[in-house]
Image (cartoon, rainbow, N blue to C red; front, side, top):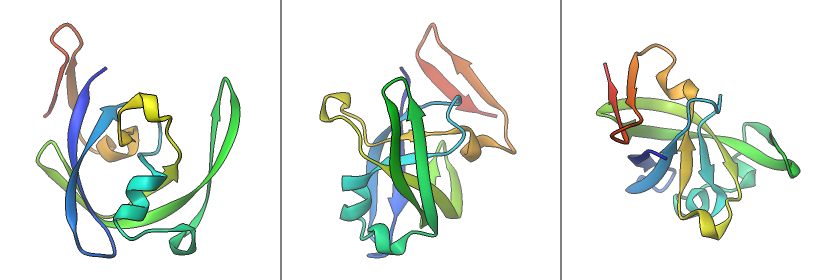
Length: 118
């Protein structure tokens, strides 16, 4: 598991740092609902519904547009993230998905547990 520090800016214009798991197998970047609420988001800010499928079934959530998401020194403005509940035992705030890297090259070194945006 590769953890990435991610800065998010929400409606409250605060910019906080969070721990995201690098997950290129996830097509959409996700943030824990409690983190989204801390930034000033709720379901009423949704631009659409979101649905996640796993071995345990499906979970409903919502998608919001954050003012900015910064990771690997790359800032994405007006970036869409899906808000879903994460198990407290996960100890992460979100998943950094493939959509963040769609126009970039990413070098992942699993042996060292590192990743580098090229």
